[in-house]
Amino acid sequence: MTGKIAGKRRVFSGIQPTGDIHLGNYLGAIKQWVESQELYDNIFCIVNSHAITTRQDPATLRAKSYELGAMLLACGIDMDKSSLFIQSEIDEHAALAWILDCNIPMGDMSRMTQFKDKSSKNPKNINVGLFNYPALMAADILLYQASGVPVGEDQKQHLELTRDVATRFNRDFGECFTIPEPIIPKIGARVMGLDTPESKMSKSAKGENHAIFLLDSPEAIVRKCKKAVTDSQSGIIFDESRAGLYNLLCIYEIFTQQSRAAIEAEFAGKGYGHFKAALAEVLIDSLRPIRENYARLQREGGYIERILQEGADKVRPIAKATYQRAKELVGLV
Ligand code: TRP
Image 1 (cartoon, rainbow, N blue to C red):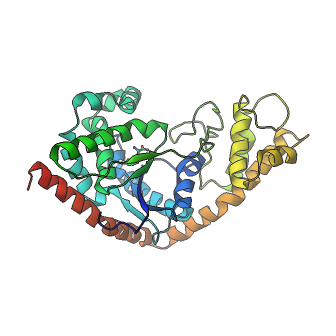
Image 2: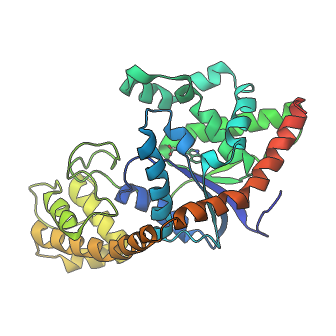
Image 3: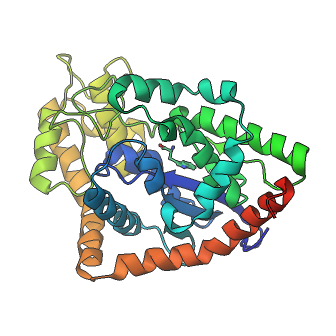
């Protein structure tokens, strides 16, 4: 379809502009996106329209959307190799979501476990948009004829719904959408909370030592590593049953790119204090370039806004072509 980079698989990724980016977001998604830029024709989308399914302060949402854009560039998203834009800049997302809405059985949508989760956590604001969230997500993906979507466990069901509605639409109205496949992220990239090693690092967790954010100061990183929950056993070894230590070691492994044997040898006979100090140092060194890039981008007034606008202009023709075809097929033109 339109605009596809020759021979490369088109992959669509979405990320919400809520909360600050932490190590879990970085290792679980962003770092892998950056590394896949030679391999795929990537479209990265800041999904601000999804964010308003829960109540947002308007000024904060606007600022966070641009901050996330700057953060993705700081991490290494390259606008010459990939596309990056803000979802609401392209009207066709919401417009296609409506056509899809009319082709998703109520029963299918009612099975979405994330809606059940989110609505039970936030009973005061269960709105129709939250229920329909997966239709908008399907529109994001289908508009660009993406054949792959990186998904974690929590988004698999939404991608399955996307495949179902696209397949049904193609069958009932005529060929329109590429059927996307899940791209399952590498294992080992699941980062757990530093204070809750049995659950995933999360933007919304309250503990002040729960997550390391990419923009944390060196002092904050040292403090959080020191406070990270471990156990009363000894020996710095990769043992999944020692969840806290295992999580820290996996983070160390990813950033140093050393083998597990080499890491265990490095810390043989040493205690937690020693290991945690080494981990903090590796994190500070690895995150420094991101922090510096980010600060530089923020200093260039208006730059991020312009880049994101250009990103939207680049992909808009693809979205328009797909939407026009869907409209024609259902008889809206
Ligand atoms: N629902 C995704 C999440 O919360 C974000 C998202 C929106 C997305 N649209 C998408 C992810 C399209 C992949 C493809 O993580």
